[in-house]
Length: 86
Image (cartoon, rainbow, N blue to C red):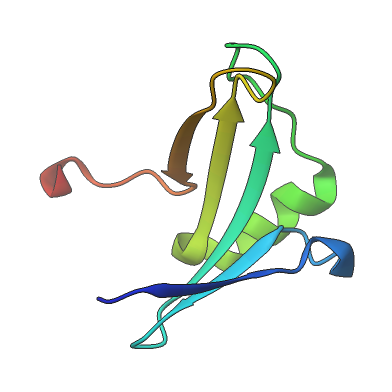
């Protein structure tokens, strides 16, 4: 699939923070949430929820925990995958 080209679009108020495009033009629209501690629970705004729902399988939620000390990253596609794709 090759490297991705991420672009920070957070100031554009598009409902996600990063637009990333692969060499074969696959697109990911990424919302990033950070937590200072180990708790990974996050809140999404109504705008974020609506936009990510519109983007479907191209929408991703990245959660970064322990931002103030030992960073730990998790990335999730916002759509559940069918069990036969595990």
